[in-house]
Image 1 (cartoon, rainbow, N blue to C red):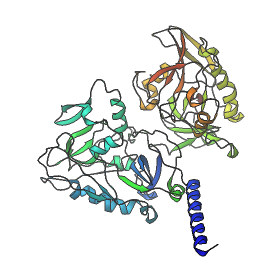
Image 2 (image 1 turned 45 degrees about the vertical axis):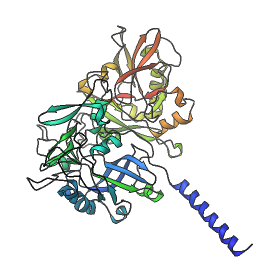
Image 3 (image 1 turned 180 degrees about the horizontal axis):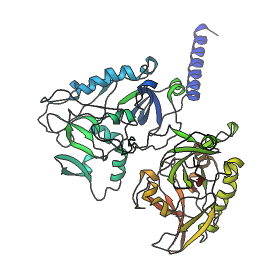
Length: 517
């Protein structure tokens, strides 16, 4: 073989090896994934250093991804001079993001993944003929979203679909009656702040006991021009788009946006979730302080448990890798009484049918109740843990508008009812038909494996249109037009219905003994 042909063969082999390496080491990011990248002060404790930043993937374009900080990381004014016509290109905030924030938040290795990108800065969408000069294209490593990008990345419908309402001298987009996704969009634009950021905001962020209000949402800046010299686009604390603009000299929430290169080594260093969780932009950020209930019961020290905190108790397969054993179950504290703690699994742990057969069946005799109190109970908890679980008398009912039967059962494990998910004391809105972010949940990787690989094919399973977030089951049934149905919570957080024999997500509920000091 000639030297020329040999070199050609070697080149082709090298290309094939490179392609094979890429395919085996690179898993594509998807919109909605959450990644960990960079660090910044967040817990308001400067003595322990900065904390890792979490970002939501807004879009993936070939080998690059656009990501936005999941939470507000600071409160900074857009401009520090008054009386001037302010544009993004010469704003104080742009300089702060591309210098102070950039150099302090990212290591040298991380900076190598950030793309220095040209971005367009278009006119205000409701005043294309504004007397302000045309904004220039800028080249930024770090920036903020614009009005146009809210639409591009699915955080706002086309502005032409909305009516304009004037409220407190601001233009807010108000949905038309036929825009059913409007409230959901508002919720997705609402944003929590880190404790460090909230401490800098000029309002009372603490309750009467002096605790930081973790559930408050805050306004955050966009980079687009408002309809006045000193006005800049923003998102209100209620999630509405403020097109008129807000005073650029006032400190508002900052959610940096960066464009990053993605490849195999990047995943090894920074990627934390390999599946689409459809994470809402208002997802609660305070999930790091998790209480281990085994330690709670065994420790002589006082460990305070409050509503909405996360605890671990028991173990169940979750990462879809049975070779490494079961993973600790995370639970949300829903309610605390004098003697017990009501826990709801944070994630959807399994897929099961409410009942194996399509018959008129109540909670007391359905196959799911037997599965929870037998198989799940015995597989998720050891003998020591079972001693702390309270067998509880629970009241169940059907959807009142269709039936009027109410009965009691005695259970170690159960699931929520319609009454539970409409109980404000448990952290939910009182309207079952209203979308409620506190009702939403996502499945574990094990559950995703059941959907994709088990006898519960996607076509037979109550999943969302995206297929990655499922409906989960309640114990309240209804009989409607001859159909046997069970109440379920949709991926948007409102209540709807599914056949009793359709596999749906399961979020177990247990009661634990409260330790008295």
